[in-house]
Amino acid sequence: MGLYPDPVVRRLQWARWIRSVAQGIGVVDVALYLNALHWSAVAIGGVLAASAVMGAVLIAAVGPLSDRFGRRPFLLAYDGLVVAGIFALLAFPVPPVITAALVVTGLGRGQNGSAGPFTPAEQAWMASRVPGRERGMVFSANNAVAFFGMGVGAILAGAPHWWAARLAGPERFLPVFALVGLCSLVVWIILWATPEVRVTRRPQAAEGVRREENRRLGRLALTTGLNGFAQGFTGPLISYWFATRYHASTAAVGLTLAASFFATGLAAFGAGRLTGRFGSVRVVAVLQAASGLLVVLLPWMPTLAAAAALNAVRAALVRGGQGARAAVSTSLTRDERRGLALSVNALAFRTSSAAGPPIAGALWEAGWAEAPFAVTAVLQLAGAWLYWRWFRQQEPRAAQPLEEVPSS
Image (cartoon, rainbow, N blue to C red; front, side, top):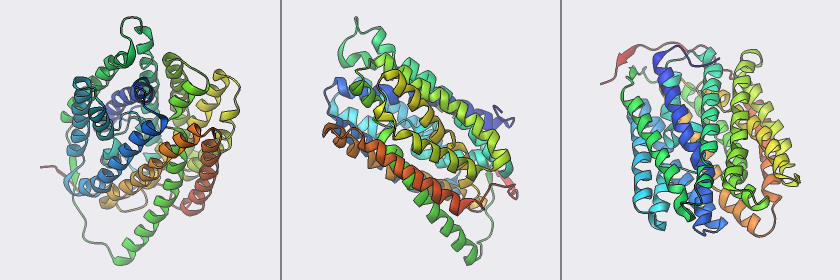
């Protein structure tokens, strides 16, 4: 299982890999950069939360609009914004500009190589090129490609430690942020060179069909929201937690997160194979539940090495099923509402995860270091049970092809 033979899907996968390298740098170094600027944990969490809220506003519009106007323009807009945001951060590294750049680009929130709030357009474009029965495998492979890129980026994120003697203070992070901007520029060029084929819209469906689709989307929002709220408690601030809990250096934190990204890449490949045998819904539910059982043990690990190993496994489990989860989302509506379905999925995750970082930061500063992990465990287990109960009959299947016409 690797790059899909369709040329458009291959280009989207290459774009995701390069984008994920940039995001791997950001998920390690953004929190550490702000810490070097003497920002508090609450302030760091607040910026990441504001980024999630900004993304939520965009997500709500991108999916439905991409159903109408096509997917490619929105992806070009996203990577163009990242290039502009990074340039602004490098040219004017002062708090208002840094805050604006991070909020607009989403840098530091991970995002797993996706196009941030424009992810519904990316996934809907890919789904239009892949038959329903193959989406679990292909989306999982795409997820794996992204996490391997995140791992590479996390290793590169340790570079400021290498030249700290020559470039001290917060400025030591700026060269790697420049690399982030370069990666985004390359992605923009790839997407610019990729043609999009649009699909014709079918006549309006019967009210009963739309009502059933809307019921499914409501359930999707709830289960995804539980998972997003859970991951928001641990994911965005995990590099800060490793640095403060175990006094780990930038390079050590980068290697620690890189291990979790590489493990997730392997888990995503495995999840893709398992979807063909057991179905995407079962794979998602089992992986999420297993991760929930492990995360509660994380704050009790006595050493950085033990914590890094456990974090790699628990992160690989919950994130390794994201490709299968996206494949299920594409099967909940007709093709012409696919962008809406993916927007609901992404919006629910982003809005719910926005509450996690500031709450977790406040709990850590208050001395309740174990609480965010316990909350994560409870929410992940509850979300996994509901996901299995509601969607086990909604496995992705071969979709009826639509008549395709070149986009204007």
